[in-house]
Length: 404
Image 1: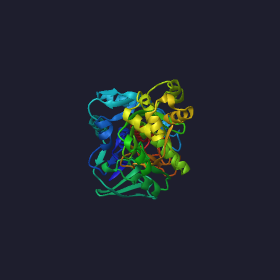
Image 2: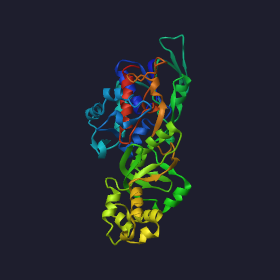
Image 3: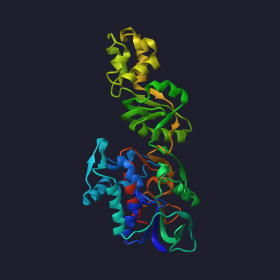
Image 4: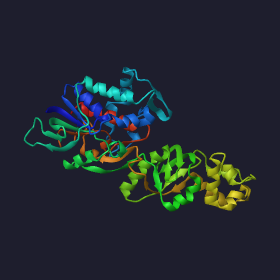
């Protein structure tokens, strides 16, 4: 069977691309190996899908080329996707940091995209397993041949929207990276992103009494910081602030080959040194003072670990300046060395992927392989937590749909 465009991956980016190409009059085949359509969309945001963010810019994304995503984000913006929802009368609401969610169910977005594909005449092959792909040098009109368990298909263009490695339990595979390598398109090694950080056993043992604590804190790595909840868990560090900073920690480790600590500011917005010295006439112990800003059990255990009995039990007025300065330094910059991450099974998305250096930012086409496109999470563009990764899927899928 012959098509103008074959798209592999019927997720957010794939369906957006298919609908756009179909509306341009292209004969489109959408292929996916899973039975459930748009499963990543369905489970997002606790079933309500954090589909985009009010504020979107290239600053909210990580990549070896941080400017690559600008073109796509500018040509299909968050407001363009919001307009699609409003046209369908899908109700949504805004949460903190500009995050937008469906009022009812993420299934509404899946249905909207599925209907757009159907209206555009897109053909479906789901579930359908791709067995091999070849590029026919002698066929300029239909150079791509895709062999599947449902037969072979040919097309003028091939779009890869197969996603990354995050959440393997719903079908994530390295298919897109393998295909890129087959056609000599470079790949930045994929790593888990927006993922909890693991701590070494000896450090975990020391922090064990603090496990379960939820802190309003700031997680910082190098020049980047996020203020959100930080969770101390039995395996390491989690919570929104940690998920955000994990991507930066992973990128730096990839570039330098060395692990560096993440710093936790337990009193964000407060100069701990100035604050503690102003309290030096107090009669209560430091842990009681810290409990004004931190969970009481955590404050007691933290003081016990970093100050011992003299900090836990003695009044703050009896502590020397050196002790107070040391504690203050730790309160504003508590260094914790991650041993790694909890892996793709706990990651929200993938860091790395098909190198942006090999792609056109205007079309998403591989520069050296005409007719081959990569979109969505399979590309080395990774957004912050908060709807940014879905916006990249919509934007990159829309752009490729104009050219494939």
